[in-house]
Image 1: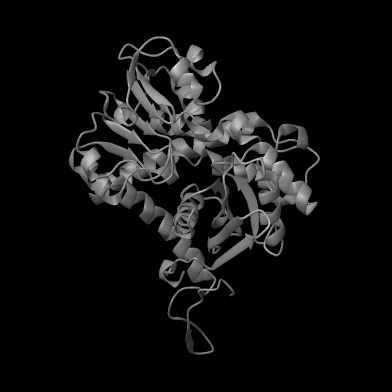
Image 2: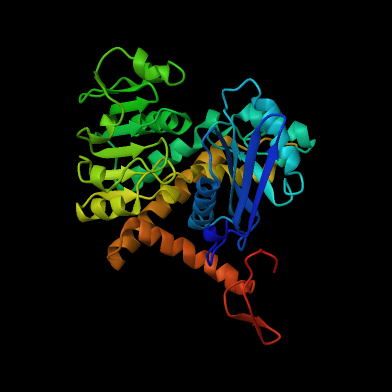
Length: 385
């Protein structure tokens, strides 16, 4: 774990395990200079500490990128979300982290967890403030139901690449990909390819998005009548104006980046392109909207949800959508302008913007190397200041 630490964090890494269920879990609080740690919790049978630490760092930049006052954090549970013992494993995880939840970290939703799981967290800790993303019936902001992340992905795209009549290919038809497809279509784009874990479909003349999304889950792709069937991964290489990877991290490497036929790559997933791929895409003149700029709709909604945890009133979805649109559109334009002025990749420009905000907060709180109180040099890696 020491190898994970650098000048930014992580400030705290907590690992837990439960022999009864076989659950193993980790919480990574990356940087709290701008506020308490906040990020999603994922469940996967192949989860690693390094994976969660990387995602926690993305959250540090994502909160700073949208200029909202929380810090980066992420949690993960190494367990199969399809297991009949999922609830028991989840309850054990949050129970073992009750020292940190919700005082230092509030559970959010990521891969493998649902709105009902957020409700289970609240029940286990007997604290409505322990989780966000709960169903509307419990006064929460139901991210998946509202489609806030995918909505923001499309809004950010439209700000820098007006979508009317443009072709869009989407990898991944989970909560983000579905909501993005819906919003892209509403903004006038033509969806030419989509994929799920079960396959991919392509139609250069455009898919019927309404008919496609009428089928829930991954089966939407295989049950769609029309279009050509593609092998998984081929949807990344179809001729299109906009390519939107909304699945897992690390799906586009430098080799694949040299074959992509798109003008714009919009990172709906976290970390879908490698640093080498980003350089290749930039050299080819392909614009990339970085993940922590394009997919930050979820963190904007989380900001509303954090405020609403103890309120008797439900947050207004219209206000959430309006704020997501305004913030993500403005940020997308700013990052592209900074990248152009600096001769940098968009990732480098976005990271520099976020870093400057976090560093300033660290300096103000005396957390940077060389900061001194009573004449001694001091560097905090624990987060206690």
